[in-house]
Length: 433
Image (tube, rainbow, N blue to C red; front, top):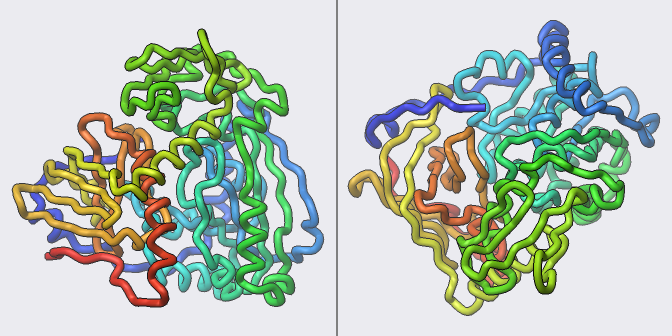
């Protein structure tokens, strides 16, 4: 899927008016049916099936539906499971580009990833209480990088208590294995299934504390796509299964070099030391020679996190890279405004560019994680920062790891937050026109 790119000046992009807020629409049966019909080819290709658990306790709805997020097929799965009942979908702002009217008709509610958005809470409440419509939300807010859950926001229980409705959880299995984000949009032949369960009844939401609800959510969003594949004995025999693996495994576990790894075909190699692995059909890493340092991809990813943490704590961590800059201001397209430099340290992000016209700073405690994605709308890997007024999409020019930036942002947040001791901090600062 691609997105319209509009080349323009920074001044013109900043002058673009934000879209006016619109209340969510209850999707009618025609659009719900069209969406289901469009989903049929992928559902047939994946031989999709689902089971139900404790759903008799959920009542008739409306519900808040929470779902793990691995690939686009998740939306198709939801359209099938809950048809013909209507549901609104919490969607990213960028997904409205070029198709805002259609997105509204199918019930989508736009929001910005990892940016505080009180309007979203009001919109969700309106859809549930006024329109009597289920609301589907992906609390991870982005696709999984390594087959495990992206960190969830704390105090989700506050939202659940405000809505006061049963919480349904849809857990998919096989969706990540079929189409992992790092693998360059190349789909594998994998069966996909889901379990639909009542995670919390309305009474349980009312009686449990926010911290208790957070624990329940953390347990629900505890999964490992690679481990699931191995336990189920699912073989991926496609010859491209290791393509793009360097996007998540950017640091060699043997020599420590960064930016020298490459996944190609069925092999994963470090060009600095020559260490070579095969990504087996069962999703394990096996060294071609010598010892296998990590045979489980998520274990390697966790090691990289620990290494980033060490860099942060020692003061050695920094990202300073040349980037192409896009601004998302409305639903017409992403405005490509020129180039600049993105810097990231324990003090947060600083973006400068557009011949000195753009300067933006973002606090390290602005968000618990970072919006970084691979091959964003087929443009390239991206780091997105910004606030409710404007989002900046930064595309590194020289292959810098956006996965490392996310890990660093998460670890810096963990370190900085305990030190606040209740003090108030502005999320962002900088020159805004």
